[in-house]
Length: 133
Image (cartoon, rainbow, N blue to C red; front, top):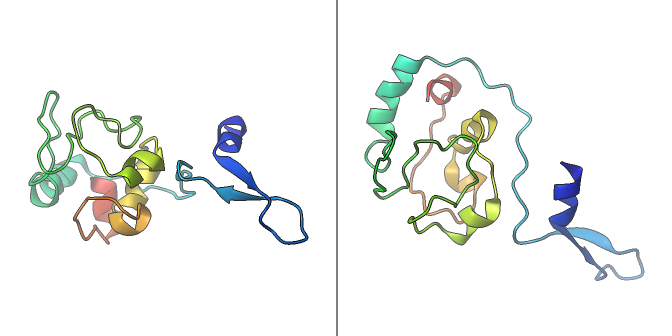
């Protein structure tokens, strides 16, 4: 909402001889991408998860944290908030509410989407595979 976004900016008077301008504060959330997420294939997604994600993440209810946090219930959860996992400051400050659009773009290149993340993963370049996941 606009009200929330306004709270994420702070005014800066550092512009010489000009009006104050808005600058991004440290805790400004990453806005939801304007992208169409194609339909995915659940069976292909399960295979991809086992091959690319399961080494570091669990996805079943009650799953434990591994190198990465459990992903059960991640959609709709705010980034960096799973209790008991030591997230990077950038992950906590991104304040992403995980959605299909955020996840679709994040998985292309996590370190580029969220600079400073501890997630060591090159990404999934193929749009079809990301949609399946």
